[in-house]
Image (cartoon, rainbow, N blue to C red; front, side):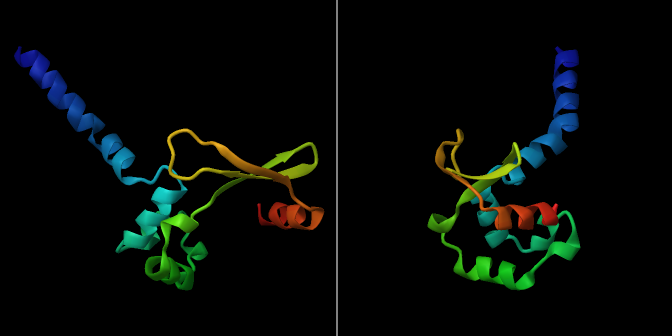
Length: 113
């Protein structure tokens, strides 16, 4: 019985960082915006500190409305780029709209890669 309890205790200690990450990191666009809005240290959400726009963060923290969150994906396929809008904040994404992007906008996103 002690071995079983010791094994469970060790597994919990080893799994604690993964559990903490899964609970605290946003998993979709809606959670990301809520985390950004409520975060005291929004810089911790960025991979690269050069990409931080403090005016945008301030706007999100003061003016955030969950109804305005949109989740999009850009899919590049066969020399075309498609704009796919999906439902934010749901466990299973559903497609709202798909549109092919004009060449000028496609080139803009390709330059940003």
